[in-house]
Image (cartoon, helix red, strand yellow):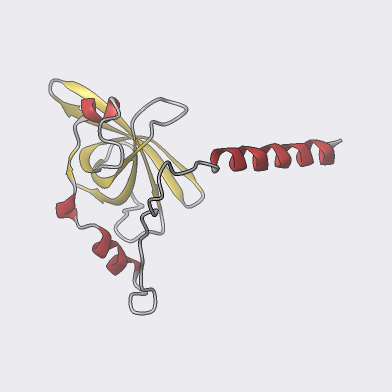
Length: 153
């Protein structure tokens, strides 16, 4: 019985992935690509520096991010770490930022093995994150940022 349920689950997941990935382009535009020369640039930090430096990130505007106006924007946010959880190499936490007389809450995801990520952060620490705005978190509805750099202040 478990094998049957497992097999059905796998089939459903494959169909779901196939259905979600069958987006077609409306025109004959080529998809944007990023080329990284791994032979000459084996250090991930150097590769990331080619993609973005800290100067490329702008101060986050919670209202614009919450209203999905800044999806895929490179932002930086400073705030307090709440509710840190580790899921293998993935670190997730809520970042609470005081701004304009109120709070802005962000769901932050990063990976522990990435250079520039301070894995010693804990709840209550004040950190600055540099990352890219993605779709809102499915569970909380909070704006989500995938962080490339997490620095403890």
